[in-house]
Image 1: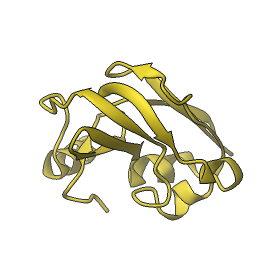
Image 2: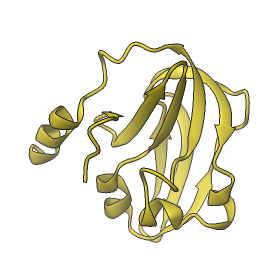
Image 3: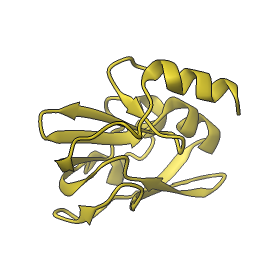
Image 4: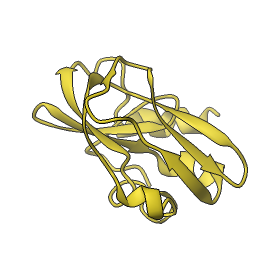
Length: 125
């Protein structure tokens, strides 16, 4: 399951860009690899992130994993539902399980993959 309207990273994050806002989350591949998500550490509001800064931490029964920001910007919103329901990431990582939203300072996506490119990347790992 790789939605066409998103951008992807080699670290298995996704970004949906709408104007100057980017919604960030982890991919289906990432949530499946981690197993049952048990805890999510979300970023602070107004935190400034550069590309590849740690934006969040996702913990599962298998491991704790850093989630890197695919774009630069300032955290404008976090998904508070994940504090009490981290399993939303497993249930619906692309909609209900989003992590945070950034007010993007540079909407350049050249370093990100399209859905087709990400699908090819997954075949290589």
